[in-house]
Image 1 (spheres, one colour):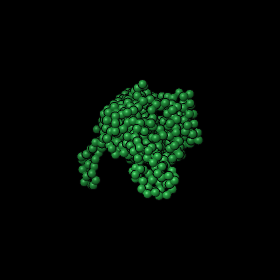
Image 2 (cartoon, chains in turn yellow, blue):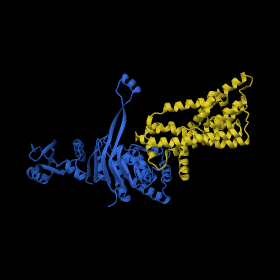
Image 3 (tube, chains in turn red, orange):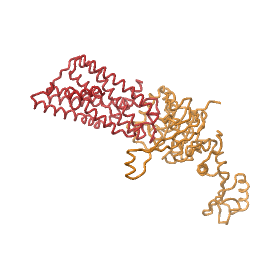
Amino acid sequence: MIRVYRQLLVAQIQAAAQYRIQAVLWMLFSIIRPVIFLAAWTAVANAQGGSVGGYTTSDFAAYYIALTIVGHLNTAWNSFEFEFEVRQGRLSPKLLRPLHPLHYSVVENLIWKVTTFLPLMLVCLVIALTFQVKWNAEWWHLALFVPSMILAAALNFMIGWVTATATFWLQRINTVNTLLQRTSFIFAGQIAPLSLMPTALQVISYSLPFAYALAIPAEILRGGVTLERGLLYLVGQAVWLALAVVAFRFAWRAGLREYSAVGA
Amino acid sequence: MDAPVVDVRALRKVYRVTERETGLAATLRSFVRRRYREVLAVDGITFHIDPGEVVGFLGPNGAGKTTTLKMLSGLLYPTGGEATVLGHVPWRREGSFLRGMTLLMGNRSQLVWDIPAADSFLVLKEIYAVPEAQYKRTLDELTELLELQPLLHKPVRGLSLGERMKVEFAAGLLHSPGVAFLDEPTLGLDISMQGRIRRFVAEYNQRSGATILLTSHYMDDVVALCRRVIVIHRGVLLYDGGLADLAARMAPYKRITVTLRASVGDLSSFGEVISNNENVVTIHVPRTQAADRTARLVRELGDQLADISVEDPPIEEVIDKVFASERPLAEATA
């Protein structure tokens, strides 16, 4: 499998090299939303004497920069791509090979993240200097962040694949994707850090998988959690990931029975 | 006798499709209550193919050919019946099954468009776990047979349709599959490229001993490659047997084409005159009497005769007759 991945990486780097500008534009596009919220919360904090619910303007900057980094590293567009592949008849050639189609997505995903990470960090540096960020992270926060980020990326990726399998039944899943995006927007800590949300929304957020893929690793990265809570979050992430994997395996098998191989 | 490579028994596929009438009211109703219709694509077909055979799989559009190939290659689950390919149930999609077969579709690409074919080949080599020495040997062979050398290092998107089809063939056969399902492999290609692809398939079959099931709307493909044909129509198997037998059974006549130096009047006493254009007359005569009638024509027309030929009717005509009959011709004879 290592040899397969190595060769897929080479091929994908070659393909991605032809669309460098597009890759960077997508990355910049993903930064716009957190920067808007950062600016809004900074304005609110300044209007209220420098802080909101214990978050200073520097804390907000740290949170949204962390959210931007996590959001970049957990990006998964496979459900959008999958629908396109099914409709265009491009899934069938992949299904004919002794390699699960998921592996091609893993490689594409990794390539995009790696090739756009450096420009992303430059943009984050500019934001950090502009908003005078204050980082509270200890060394163990960073140690916790690495597994938390891997779990978050894997979780978001698998949520994408579970969603993708809906294509087998619905043919078009744009609305399903939009629904998930909107839900994630509300419950994954994009509007505000979870601790600033009303209690009911916090309960819902911690009961759904979306925050485990975004807000939680962001809070760990900015140093906003205790060690005990951080470890508990890792367990929560692992449980959601396991559930997503099981759901995917089940949905994939059932979906293939429905697959009509249209257009191919 | 070796076990069949492809063994199909009462294979059946029913698609469930939504049905909607036209018009605004019907469209709005469909939001509330959907109506479904069942479409029988393959209706209990049974056949088997022995190792090394090249079999033509014929039928008009919508006959169920591609659906059958998709079931046999593991893309589709059947609604009923059984099938094994290389001893595997295709729709279980086991790794050893996928490594042993290929499905090539003339109108579909399996290569990455943005990179040269040679790089896609390396990816396929690893996916199919082809040993280095075997990969080199196979690629050299395919490069020679398909004259691929100038194409290997160009991005696939820059290749013409014919060039792309050649690299698609190579991509599909790099892992030396024991079974190849070819769905319209010459679709859209010019006459010269069709001929090259045909010669390649024939030579590949001879060299590798691979079993090939081929669909094509070009009868030249079938005539050049297949001694046996399976004909299906509306999901039902109409004929399974030799191509030559099919012509004899469905068209029990020969076609005599007479070229005259000048018009000689009515030739209907020799057989059924099918056409008479500018002194070229086509006559259908019973097969058993073809030799006698030809001799009579030569004798009676004498100097008026410029040329004469006796042939089987074109295979397209024979196949049309099979489709028109819409009932099984005979038990499988292959």
